[in-house]
Length: 177
Image (cartoon, rainbow, N blue to C red; front, side, top):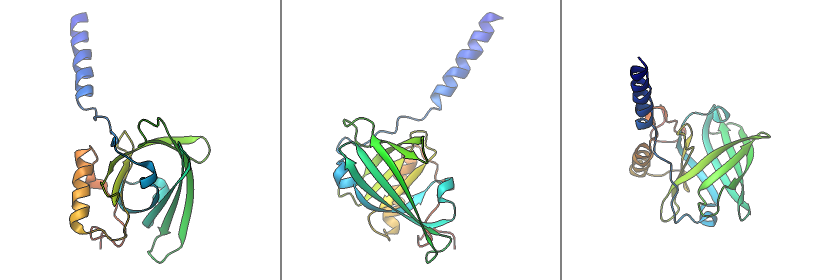
């Protein structure tokens, strides 16, 4: 009986390990200064603080070598609707890996996010949580081409993100009409 229990435990443990997602690695070449600036949301996974946002932009600013400030701008319910602003502060967990960030929201709440993709020209980037619950596909321009968006979605899927729940800005060719 004990042997059967051990076999079941080991089997369940191995199955849970095989379904684990690989680490969400950050690019070794990431230049944090080049990453700073304004980004526009191309797609994202659902999250409460962006409910009813039909378009979102972010402004990343460097506060210190390992500290950043993130300002988010949400156009509420309509592209010409009121704009909501949020401010978060974060830091680089280890300067050897500048894409691994810890971002603080409302008081003591913080969450890890990794910049896991950045285009060589810094026109596009992807930021996600290691557990794959949160994702932002970002562009420096308001209207990337459909081909560029499709390429970024493929990269997100290749990194373990489920695209079935992606939310697109109102002006996106992928937005529900």
